[in-house]
Image (cartoon, one colour):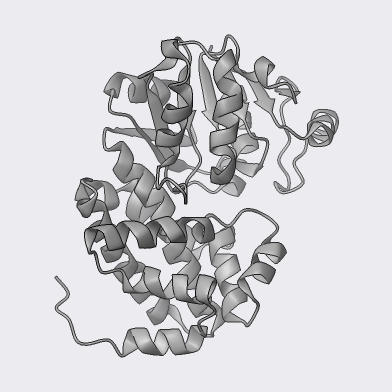
Length: 335
């Protein structure tokens, strides 16, 4: 039995907390929102996870120290835009014996760092935590299905394989199969870039296009992800695995996908701001666009689908005309 702190009481953090608690671990969930903590503690249901009961054994707190100090694992599940501030606030309560797990997906717009890189940077302010392993936890895992104990598979990635294996051992269950990987940046780039492709697929669906269009966007979007990943020194195999094509498929096709939902609303004529407001949760594909465009420009990598999504979301381009421009590009060899 392990002691685990979960930073973030959203759908993903709560679903993982439930899974880990049912596995016999002592789990403490933190949120900065004291009212939300009180409601979760009292009602034992999450408003966005219909039908899921939260075990009584899970401790909810708005005190960050309580969720961090003395834990075997501390799991970051806050949205990517809050990872840095959360890590900065948490580092004073962490020890070198605590294994940090980053389960947020995204690239920081200002620094172009992945989430484990952001956590590393903030932990390095404490001498004892410099170089401490941080494990990336990513894959095709919608919280809504993890909360229902539907079989899922995920990747734990760390340059120190023993750290990834420790996460694998503790986080594996009857409904969660955990694989290990040492290509941390590849796993995290997959987790960020697939959201952009899913957003693009949603825009196409909102425009009324069909299965052919969606399949083409997913396949050619994966090609862009691989090109950018290889330019960043990542393994192509990672992009063909669970964190890459696996997560891309589920995010670009599922009714649970907030990125796909936001894209569909944009395709139907809503502004990006209105679409995000209607989704009501963080749309990570929108947040990842600036970094993806910057990295591609830095490496001279061609990313027509990602660039088209950026034009629609950030520069007011017309979605239908943007699709026409994509279809009218000069002829290419597939490989």
